[in-house]
Amino acid sequence: MSGRYSQGYDSGYDPGRQVSPRRSDGSRRDVRSGPHIGPLRLTPTRVFIGIALVGSIGYLVYSLTVRDTNQIPLLASGAAILGIVFAALAVLGAWRAYGAGRDGSGGRAVLAAVLGGLAALVSFAAFATAAVLALLWRG
Image 1: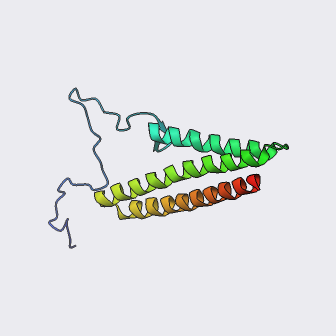
Image 2: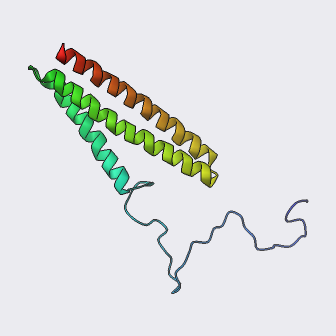
């Protein structure tokens, strides 16, 4: 037998066993602080972006159902709002990618960069759609 346990006795080290943190009174501490939805921690930024995303998509769906002379301006403003929300998501993705890269988490940095880049593409497409719809409305 070779390796770490080759001395023939049990050193007491078990890599699969983890010790949970305890308070000074000996009780176990809850590691997760703050509100969570599953593994995702709710922060004010995430709640704000989530509400803005759901609200802008709802507004865009509503503007698709309106059948009068205001439909094109409603669609243009809905696309512009959606572009603003996805631009904020792109900035947050860049921020998360920088933070994860600084912490040494290369996989998380790449994932955040890719998702932020996709959010930027959606943002540019929404702004382009808003510009085209605004030109159609003026023309």
